[in-house]
Length: 129
Image (cartoon, rainbow, N blue to C red):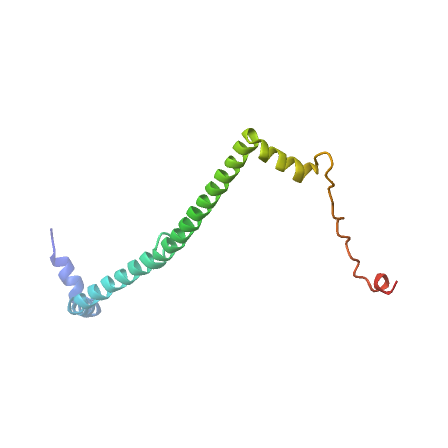
């Protein structure tokens, strides 16, 4: 390769020579600044990125909440399953359910049913009457 033409071109353009010298003297500072910027951007991504620490904490809290919901639903399911088993096999449970829901009574018993509460009208004219 013929490098003389490049040397002649640089010699004719002193500004390029000064820029090359300045770049050569500050190359370590530029590399340090570039690496520092890269580290800061990477740290920001690790903390605040889509899968960063903040998102991880939110997902972890959601996971714990869902685990508690699953446990609650499982306990409710166990309770309901026990109730179904009782209603299938225990005559006392069947009788209790018939008395509560269907208002059944044995011969000679009296069932008292309280009336449904009436909805109170809050208009001024209804209160004056």
